Each structure stands twice: as structure tokens, then as C-alpha cells.
Image 1 (cartoon, helix red, strand yellow):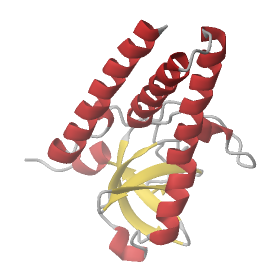
Image 2 (cartoon, rainbow, N blue to C red):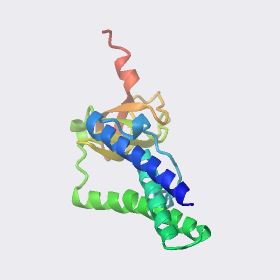
Image 3 (spheres, helix red, strand yellow):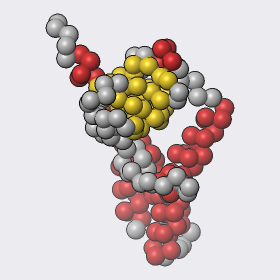
Length: 190
């Protein structure tokens, strides 16, 4: 089991390092894969926070999994004890980063996402399909932070699918009115 833990540690540490380098030098997040990895409904118990929702957190939890596995293997535990402990350690770190870490950041740095007309030109992408006349979820970027917000399609007759890049038009009553980037720029002749 030591070799398996070592292989996972080397691969996950290399991928996490490459992801951090791309994130801070080229502003590319999650190797360009911006969609969430898991989409589990349920708001009373945040069970979805135990599973990695981005590639960065996946690499981090795999690295912690392998470190815990090596630690328990070094302590002399058999593989059938060390493997579940390592998996639970990776899931707990994933929860701490995604839920507790996000809530701590929101507590110390309040949501300073622009409101009203000042929210225009914020870009992001759709994480939950917005059907015509309905609302969905969109992640908007502002000052190198991501904000998951409720959004409505600015063009009432159109629909925005999951994963499509959007641009914010304005905000009203906590809802951000967004439009597809390709719809905005299709009428402009360059």
C-alpha cells in the first residue's frame, strides 16, 4: 500500500502545484474546467461539501488522503484500517476547505459583490440551467473571488444552459440579470 499512497501523493502534489501556478500566473482556474464536479441537491445538511467540487480541492483531498495513508501505514496499521481512515481524512479536509473555509472567508470579508447598475459587466458562468421565465445559479467573478448567486436571464425568451459563459447586465432584489456572452456579441460586426 505504501507504493500506491506514494504514487497518489506524487501525482496529486504535482497536479496541485501546476494548478496553483496556472491560477496565479495565467489566471486559469481548474485547468480551464470551470464546471462543478458534483451537483447534489440538499440544503439542510451540506453533504455535497464533503465531496470535492473543483479540481483544486480534488487534488488537495487526494494529497491529504495519501499523506494520512502513509502515516497510518507507518504506524503499523493494516491496509483495511488505514484505507478508510485515509479516505475519511481526505473527505474531512475537503469539508473544512469548502464549507468551513468559505464561511470563514465570508464572515471576515463580507460579500462585496456590486449591486444595481454597478454589477454590469461582471462575467461568470452558469452552474444551474436558467430556463426562460425561471431562475438558476450563476458564479460571478469579482476581485479574484467567485460568488454563487441567483440569476435570471436578461432576455426572457432565451435559455442559458449549464457551463455557458455569461455577463451580468444588472442586479435587482438579490437577483442578477445575466445574458449569454455569445448573444451579446453576435450583433456586433468587427
